[in-house]
Image (cartoon, rainbow, N blue to C red; front, side):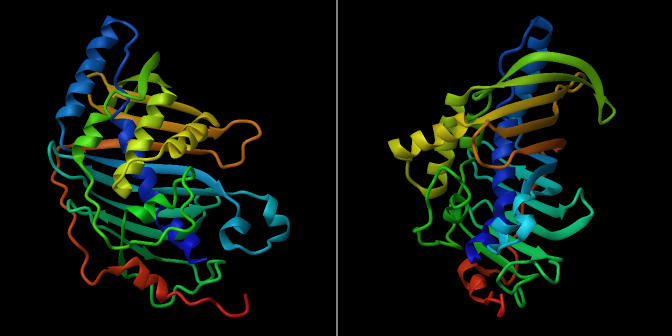
Length: 324
């Protein structure tokens, strides 16, 4: 049960990091010469920037019975809409290490029910930290959060790997707290790879700027390359042939839809949207993610939270709730 709790707490960070790499990949194949200039400028600016501030919005659904591990009667057949939103800032300087911070709200029922607040920090030495606040009195989980809420805990790459559906990590030992540095150059190298510009849609106004709107095409083979590289980066060794095949199978079992908006004046990316939908006959939840860009090249230097403890230590403070 503690594994389910841990997965819920850090899922937002994994999706946010993957989404940022997706943003860095949207500049590629323009449809005409005018678009060529716009996309070339956006790609150049993206490659030269060292950081970005954004607002993240993720929408999906969960089955309450699957999360709590308890029978829920009619609720077992109902998927509850979940939204994750808040500021997400990431630094990726050339030749350096990734660093970032996010403060996310988890809500349910079209934003009417507050589930919790999750703060995340990634320092440039690869250490990752999380803090949970404003949990409801009854989470529905068979564990107690007494003494845990409000404290900072550290976790590591292998904990993130547990959220990746193509890997079987059920027997893996946790390595919470061990720093796993992330190379910024790995992120930069993904620019223009697995997403390419498709049809240009009607221009619009976004953030008070004239914006060009593009549909994007997903190259599933290059996406598999990226996810394989990300998995290897998190755990420190390359994926096996079998794991690569599992990643490819996962990608091919979903429909991937993406679009972007680019400022016609500055050439900067303004917004990116990604939707992922299981194909017919495949189990799993759809999700949609939006990243709205704010500023670039701002100083982002997350501080190490005082009094943080390893995730394994934090989990020991989460006793089972009797009577459930």
